[in-house]
Length: 478
Image (cartoon, rainbow, N blue to C red; front, top):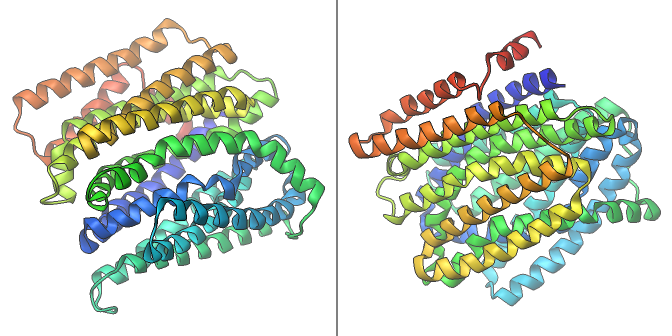
C-alpha cells in the first residue's frame, strides 16, 4: 500500500506541478493585474461566499462515497446514477439558500449576476469531485490524476488566448474569466463521466427516494464537518470585504497572499485525496495504519515546514516578483498566510485519518470550535489590523486545529511513534528557523536565493531522516 501510495503520488505531483502553479501564478494572478484589485477583490469575496454554502451541493457525499467505494468497490455502478440525481436536487436547495443569504448581506444586481454564474461553477465542480471520488475509491489514481489537472489545463488554454492575443481586443474582464471557468469545469465533468462510464459500464441516472434518504442520512456528519471547515477557512475574505472601508480593495490585497497559499495547499490536498480511500481500506481490513500514517506525516510535515519558512523569509521578494508595486501590507499578509500551510498540511493527514475511521462526531466538535474561534479572531484582528489581521486570525485558527486533531487522532486510534521518529522532525524545524533568522539578518535578500534556501531545507530533511531514500526506491521499484 505504501508503494502504491508513493508511486501514484509521484504521478499526481508531477502532473500538478506542470499545470496548477502556472495557472495560479501565471493566469489567475495576471487576471488580477489586468482587471485591478477592486474588481478582482469583489470577485474573490463573491467566490468565497459561494464556497460557504457549497456543502449544500455536496452534503458530504464526496467523502462518504470515496470511503464507501474504497471499502465496497462493487457498489460503484449501482450507486453512481442514484447519487448523481440527488446532486441535482441539492443544487436547487443551494441556489435558494445562497440567494436568500445574499439578499440579507445586501448584494446588488451586478454582484448577484456574478454570483449566479459562480453558483453554476460550484455545481459543476461538485459533479467533477463526485466523479473523482469514484476513481479514488476504486484506487484508479492515474485517471484521477488526469482529471485533477484537466479543468486547469483548459482554463490555461482559454485564458492565454484572452490575455496574450488580440482576438478579443487584448483586454479581459472579470466576467470573461468566470465564463471561462464555466466552460472548463463543464467539459471536464463530461469527460470524467465518460471515463467512469468506460470503466464500469452503463450509468443510469434515476431518483430513488429510499436510497436518497439513506445517502443523505449517512452523509450528514460529513456535510456538517465540511460546512464548518469551509466556514473557518473561507469566511475571512467575506468578513474583510464587509468590515473594512474600501473592502473590495482589502479583499484584493488578501487574495494575493491567499492565492499563493492556495497553490501549495493543492499539493497537500492531493495527499488527502489519496489517503482517504487508502486509510479506509486499511482500517476496514484491520491492518496496521502506523506505517502509512508515519509516511504521510513525515512527507507533509517536512515539505510544509520547508515551504512555509522559505516563503516567510522571502515574503517581500515573492510578492514583488509577481505583483510589482503591490500594497505594502500584501507581503506581511502573505507571510502570515503561508505559515498557515504548516498546520493545514498536518490537518490533511489526521483529519483524513479520523474521517476514514468514521470519527465524524469528534471532528465536527473540533470544527465547530474552530469556526467560533476564527470568527471571533477575525472580528478582533480585522478591526485593529485590517487585512494583516485576517491573515493572523487564519494562522492562529489553523495551529489550534492542527494540534487538536493530532491529539484526538493519537488518542482515538492509539497511534504511537518511537522517539527517534520525532527527533528528525524537531531537528528540521530548528534548523529551518535558525537558518531563516541568520539569512534575514545577515544577507541582502533577493528572489534568486529562494531556490538554494529551499534545496538546503530538502537536503537537511534527508540528513535528519525526515525524507528517506527508501521512499524513492519504492517509487522506482513500483
